Length: 315
Image 1 (cartoon, rainbow, N blue to C red):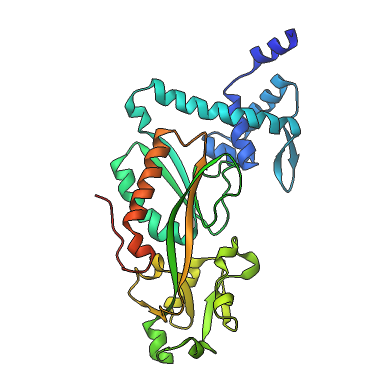
Image 2 (cartoon, one colour; image 1 turned 90 degrees about the vertical axis):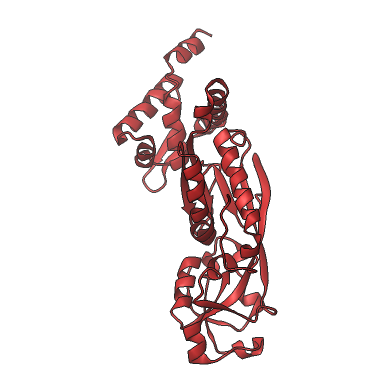
């Protein structure tokens, strides 16, 4: 018992903050940037925490960085709820000004994040200047368990985990061509006429979700001479007037240089899901952003379904 009391007395609770960032990023250099300190400070605080607890929390790998030991994983399971409880406690005992401040990191698919979420969030940060928001519009999966983001918008609902999740919206994809392409190749009036036309599409074995592999099921013989893991790259390629592309309406419809082809025959519907950790959902800044995203997404249902070209902003 005396040993346990001594360990507790020598524990610097602030070291848990350093532990959490290293556990999430697996790199002391990345953790130092997120915490605004130098590399040596992070290493020193981790060493101090391990000494206070009398155990090794990380194993260092030249290729994989800082890997949690079994004891480190056990500490992480306790430390994350403590962190969330402290955030909520601060909101409960502090004034409303603090409750409407803070930082939120949102991860989302690349096209949706760049062409839909980012312009709409400019209004949110204007309305709540004390809340800062990071947008991570990336063409790969973003992990909540590693706290890479606080809120995630994804193509698939998470199968398991301590998450609060909602279906955000349906969205539609169509086949698009630039006006320059149609002038060069002539009109396309049927699916049969697509044979021989060049396409730009995803790299099948590098797509981060099977929901992105929609070209082959619809056009099995389509030739994609140019492929990319980025939907933004596919959009830019389609604008060059040398290939066709299946693109989300919320992206392509906003650009009048692109025209939908065979809208009644090539009509693909997918879903967006929004989720966050249960222990963060009650934080005021998370609630505000969550509700705002749902509001503006519902407002822009016609754009998501390709029924209009206009992005609408909430009043």
